[in-house]
Length: 235
Length: 279
Image 1 (cartoon, helix red, strand yellow):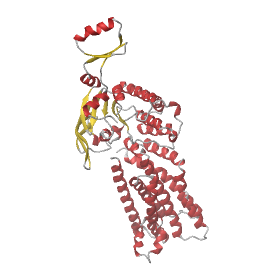
Image 2 (spheres, rainbow over the protein chains, first blue to last red):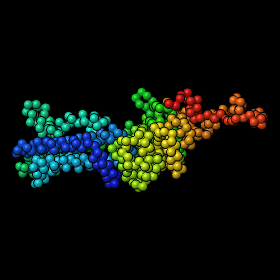
Image 3 (cartoon, rainbow over the protein chains, first blue to last red):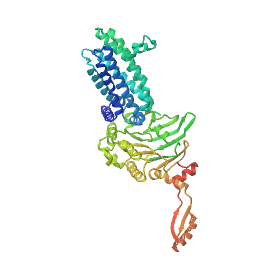
Image 4 (cartoon, chains in turn orange, green):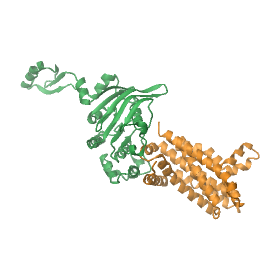
């Protein structure tokens, strides 16, 4: 299968223009920054709290934004137009994800700057964040494909945001509510694991497990997205 | 260009298409005519790879429709259906630019396509501010951008006023003259008569008649000559040599206001064949 950079760029540029004029979606992207400002004011922040804001940025911007973009394309019947054009599945998904990736990276970077958290010398964590970004964007794409409108997507995304975006916060309650232990397998907690292990000087022989768990999430969401996209090409 | 054999589509317990067969040759404008719910849109969706048939075969460009989902084939056809959408926050130009880039056509084609739908002066207008008719014209312009070999149009002028419909019809005729094959669904029989070289009457998922409009009118015309006299009387005479003398008498006495043959419209023929009005 060929990949046309021109078609990818056409979709990317269109989304950038469209998003610029979409206040509902673009204002949501500011939410993690508000959290970053609030947390940065409470003094010395533990690593877990930094990672909570980073995960929230990835989920709130990466997943929600992507979900809303795709859901709106479905709602307005514009996705079918793209599907009937020469653009391939990969070009459409990549083009539509590119804007979300750019905005997510910017918001996450600004959040870290506000919290005075540096990624310098944290190579494993950077790799973990990038892998998680793929998961959160694929999750948003899939959620957008299974919902019929932006309003429906906004409702469906809430529990997902709680599970994947705020797992780092809810995991503290796992001692009282044992069912919450399942959150240990979410990418947010695995990011924390990567950060803690690498801070302790661990090598890949110990770090492979959290990476494998996040990688498994990536594979599952990518497969779900591809299967659902192909289904949505047909009535 | 299109070859359909024994096509069937079943939704649950409802059969939308029954044993539909037809062929569309290169360069034709083929009209698929029928009232709402007769199966026209279902057929277009199957032919453009948006829906799978329950049975039968449907080939476009000589390949089964299931194989149409490649960039190469998609570049060869254009589609406008009732569920085609535009990006409301963007301008007409930005909407068309996206598709010009996707199809790899020059940006100059945007102006040409907009001119063909009479919207060249509106290209900077935001789509959200357009009327339904204007939106329909932008969708048509989008489908024409890459000068497709085959154009599928589902009720292309249903939201347009007569002046714009006429403009679109002229544009479609020109496109057809340039070699584009057009597959058109409509319930507007005048439109079909004006544009189509071949028509199929679809009723409750069944093709009940398939022929050239001219042939159908000939086949279903009443063999009668009507004469409207200046005194207000209207006469109907058989279209036979025996009527010639009587007609000549009226003419020589300068009594004739108008002479006409009673040719049915496609709408009349549809009602006669199917027993249904085109709504």
